Amino acid sequence: MNDLSGAEFYSGKETAFGMIHVRDLTKAYADLERGAFVALAGVSFDALPGQIYGLLGPNGAGKTTLLRILSTVLQPTSGTATINGCNVLSQPALVRRQIGFVSTNTAVYDRMTAWEMVEYFGRLYGIGKDELYPRMERLFERLQMKEIRNVLGAKMSTGMKQKVSIARALVHDPPVLIFDEATVGLDVLVARALMNTVAELRDQGKCIVYSTHIMREVERLCDRIAIMHRGGIVSEGTLASLLEEHQENDFEELFFRLISQRDESLIATR
Image (tube, rainbow, N blue to C red):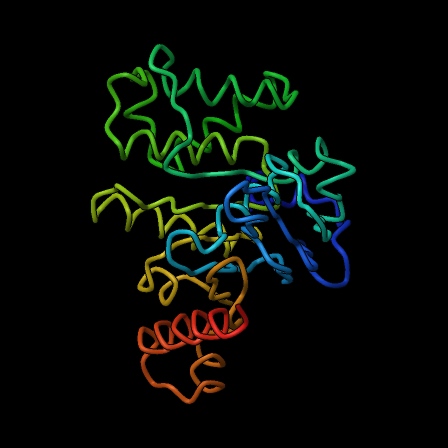
């Protein structure tokens, strides 16, 4: 296993609960018309090394808010979260070194080549050239990026840009990877290649949080699934345990039933 496996950077600091440990995370915003708007309502979960933890829910479920808190872009209103033992509120700089973040909105700079962009982010993480360049060579080979090594961002296809985004997220060899709706806008072939890459990273020991609203992706990839709606986790477990717990044979039917029940319960409490 090479140095991109996560073993080099892994610090062994994760708690007994998991590499990612989240308890009662809440995010509320002031709204002059509606009062406080709760985007995230007491979310708790644990994710382990070598595991893909899926967040499945419709748009507005709170998935992106949760991931922005985990990546220290947002601060929670209340609750706690640690990444590999580092607290997202009190140790944000350390948390950012533990994670790689991939989304469809990750910026790719028009005037930089694929190689220059990945190098730039590697240097931002303080990796010296002697270590960085061999690592980048292996990374470009594994992600099949050698043919786009010298392509400018302005001339890249959507699929090329997504490869660069993944390489940027991996260059500092973080133990945790976060994918936020990463296949949105991708064609079928590129989306499939990305999912294959995610599965390979899991097999190399990475802890992966995979957010999506596409049920097929969750069924194919995720070891555990949290179904989210209106800021909360409606149900959580493996695919098999969710189907058994709710006495349902079809995952799509289960998803829509749980979402409807969540809506009904919130309406009843108003």
